Image (cartoon, rainbow, N blue to C red; front, side, top):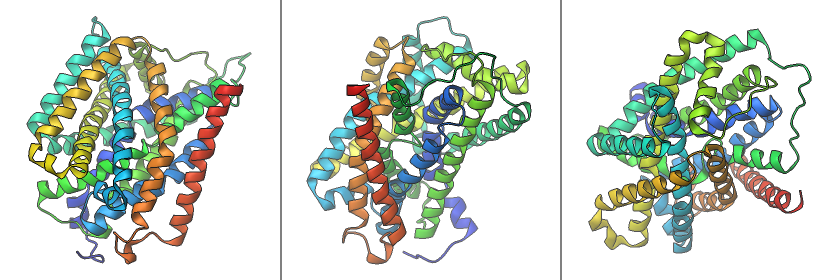
Length: 419
């Protein structure tokens, strides 16, 4: 494999897994959590968005680095450092998959119900949504993910940046007598952890681009080199990090101090989210932005509904190689299982979208130190060529990242006990 060749043609052929990653990020964590951060605390949490993107960066980069250097998935790296790492990863991923799968579907279902003005229970909307996603994955699989995500992310990004610039010119909408909420109480710390849990995405999702890269090679018949794959990663990661700041800023300028509180109902929340754009662009934009946000979240649902089953299937095959004979049936078993569980969970949380989402993001944050640690172990092991080991500054940043994740996990636990 060449490590020096770097061409525009190669980059265009390689771009895909990083964009899918960005699509997974610019979903619930950006549309919902970043916007809520700005709406509730203005720019007070901008440090949290910047730091969590910075400190999670090494662990996502490590997954790309390993696949680019070895041509193997990150899961093989876990197996190499010890079966304990792979089994623990599988167990934690199974738990987070059930919760996160459900959270993404309920947000997407709310946007779909709002856009189509569906007068039926959100439970049934989620079933229709899941059937649509399953059909698209069955008919197109990776190609559907690749092309759908690129278009939706581009459109939403342009609209959000434009709306932010317009809102910047208008200034804030703080009402007289507005009292800013407290950040460092139990509720504030809980939201802070929830914000960082999926910012930019859960760390276990770092495995997904590793698997998508291998699938992309099959699709294009092109074997990208080391630099081209890292370029794809940086395009997705940096782009999603920057967009998080725009979503936070949009919430701060349009909603902070306005007196509006985000609803716990997924459908009502969707209307409030779309209203941010209509207040900025004008009422004419409501149908357009409802369609764009709904399709963007639908693309995120596609990514998540593919990513977790793909990871769980590959994990089982790495743990028990004899299970490979059941692929791709095993993939569809996981898709159907997680879809069924998601429907059951949504049936309980139909009117509690924010509660489910915050629970999912907090669980992801508390699991993050383990995922970060094993990613670090893989890329500093002898199972990756020495010349592809991370440089000193990146190792140092990863150690600081692990300390950051552990520190705030402890802070959250203390806040639940003491505050």
